[in-house]
Image (cartoon, rainbow over all chains, first blue to last red; front, side, top):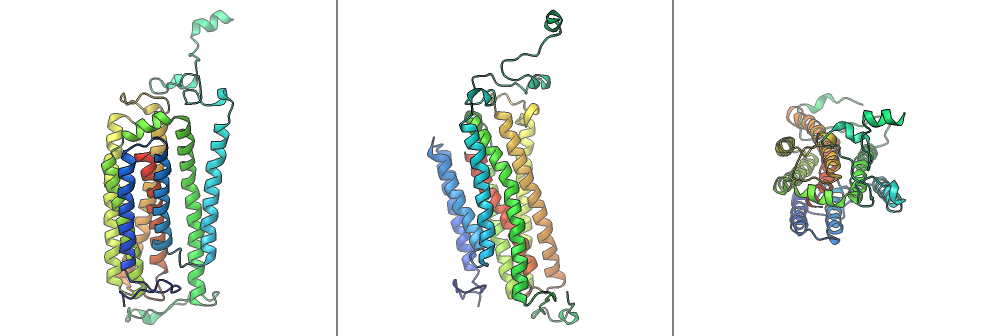
Length: 143
Length: 222
C-alpha cells in the first residue's frame, strides 16, 4: 500500500518514496549552489543562487507542503504573498537606484561622503558624512 | 466539537471529529489548510521585510556585503542546510504515516525532526559564539579588525535579525511538533480522517525550511 503511487489522485495517498526523491533533489541543488557560490561569479552569481533557491523552495512548497494537491485558493494565497514580496523588494530598490546622489547614505557605493564610523565611538555615529563632532571651543568661537 | 469516547480502545480506526458548522470532513480539512496557508503568507511577508533590508543594504554596500559573507563559516552553514532539509523530509514522512494511522512511526519521525532541530540550534549557537568573540556584531558593537568597510556592521545587523527570527521559528515549530508527537504516543488517534494536527505542524516546519533555503545562499554565498 505504501509503495503504490498515484500522483494524479486528489488528496490521494502517495508512497513515501516520493518524499525521498524530493529530499535527494534538494540535497543535489544544495550541492550545486554551494559549488557555484564558492566561485563568486561577479554578476551572475546572485541570480543563479536565487534561481536555485526558488527551485528548492518550489519543491518544498509543492510536494512537502502539498501545495500541488491543495485547493486552488491555497495556491492563490501563496502566489499573492509572493507578488507582494516582489513589490516590496522592487519599490525600495527603484527608489535607491534613482536617487539624487547626495541623498544616499554616506559611505555607500553611490555616495561621495565619508562613512559614519559607529564602531569606535557611539557619539560619532550622530555626526554623519564629513561632519566632525563640534568641539566646545568651536562652539564658543561661533557665539 | 463532538467528543468520541470510543476511540481510546481502537487507535487503528479513529472516529472523524467533525465540527457541526462544517458540511463534511473534507470541507473541514480544507478550511484548516486554507487558514494555515493564510497564516503562512503573513509569515512569508514577515521574513520578506528582512530580505528587503538585505537587498537594499546589499545594493548600497556591495563590497562590505561580499567581504562579510565570506567571513561566515560556509561548512557550518552547509551542514545546517542539510540538517534542516532532512528534518523537513522526516516532517513530511510524519504526515505520510499519520494518514495511514501508524502512530508509532509518526512519533519516531517527529522525534527525528526534533533531534535535527536541536542539532541546527546547537550549530547556530557555535556560529553566534564565534561572532561574539571576534566582534562581527551589529552597529556600534562591531569591533572586528579584519573587515573595516562602511556597511559591514549593517550586514551583521541583517544577519543577526534574520537568523534570530528564523531561530525563534525553529523553536516554535519544535513546540508545535512536540505536541503532535505526544499525542501520537499517548492517544495514538491519528489516521486517515484525523491528521490535520500533524499536517499543519509539518507545514509550519516546511516554512521554516523554506526561509532557510533562501537565507543560506544569501548570507553565506552571496
